[in-house]
Length: 526
Image 1 (cartoon, rainbow, N blue to C red):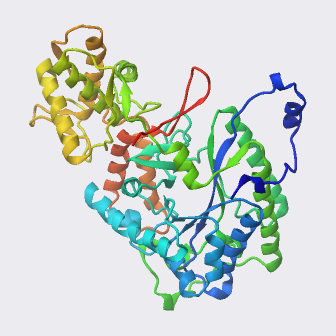
Image 2 (image 1 turned 135 degrees about the vertical axis):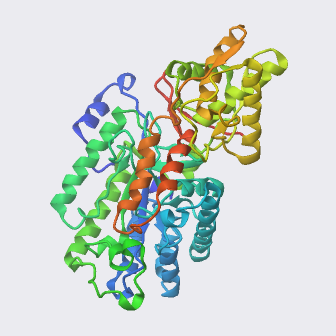
Image 3 (image 1 turned 120 degrees about the vertical axis):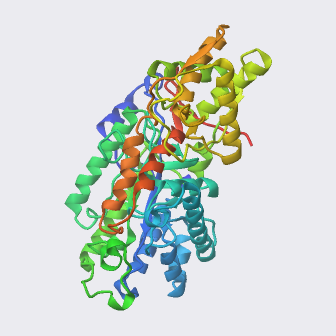
């Protein structure tokens, strides 16, 4: 939708008035916050007479009337319901916006259940099979390709992020989030829109605006939430955050006080349709409350549209702006990262590259040095996943020669070439080192090579097996199985392990340039 549809700002704050009265040469400069507007369309339970099909159209029409584009994330089965019910009017209203996939189905087994007990590769393959089916539904029903994958409720897994990467789509409501800003991040190769911050004790990241669902039908509550959102935007600007994810509505909640999930799919089981309603129905808002909710939703849409600090963008615009990566690493970048790792003697997160990418960058530098006798000005950036088994923490090989280290580096590069991921451990039993030990040893050796010193002997020390935040991210994937919807007997070991191990792929999609306070966006030439 052209931005010319925006109306003039309908309100101002005292701070903004002061900015407008300042001479042009002294006006503070700030970058607008890019914001995507999300809706989760999930209700496969309610019969048509409840009116939840109409709710979707009413919200989409309000957006269209106000000149704003939203992203509607549909469960695949929910999209099929619209077609089966002949709701071409709802489908037409949605096609003026973007459509993503909110998982293929809310039926069990859901994402953590169908990857449980599988290997990493088999879990990714099963996720791809299901999500490709959902993407085909989006194309068939709405006549446009899906713009994103997303988790529904707690239906997520580390493998779902990898599936998004292989499908070339961003992943919405991710748990992995990278410092320093904990907003747009890369994980398992996917561009992720996190809703959670591993540094905040399981709380939402400040770059994610929490739901208004319960506030829309009650104007005093809505006004209070709008004040909170105003404060949140100011805090993001102060923190230098260029992006936020703004969740606007579950359309089912326009008419329903409660979510539908536990009425039809609790505890990892699918209640047969003929038994639906035997344990009650979701409570409903009155017609007056629904009308109030629509009016307040329109107020929020106008507030977003007219606020001079915000820049609403589509999901495709987001990918075009932030979904690129560099093809190379400079020697200065690799050496600076190596020095940080050497000081910490542990895997580290980086503002531009993932730990796995940096490890391969160091390997390339070492192998080029070994072949040519000179330190390269740059090395290629490799797309590489983390290991799929746990590296050992205590090295069994304590020391090795330089030629042995080079051989380990070559073996690692060959493993990445053949599998796409890092090996967990290298060497025979009783002489093993973990990929974590190789990472630190290379980081300690590279600055010496760059300064012209020879490295004769390498020492391996006890080293953590994961980068920072791995434990928190792994526990968050584990916690998805603690809710009321998932099979209580589910084997969660693989979710926890893979969630941690793929932290080797974690990095921000936005970097802050300390030289000028501006924003650097990763670019990929293809």
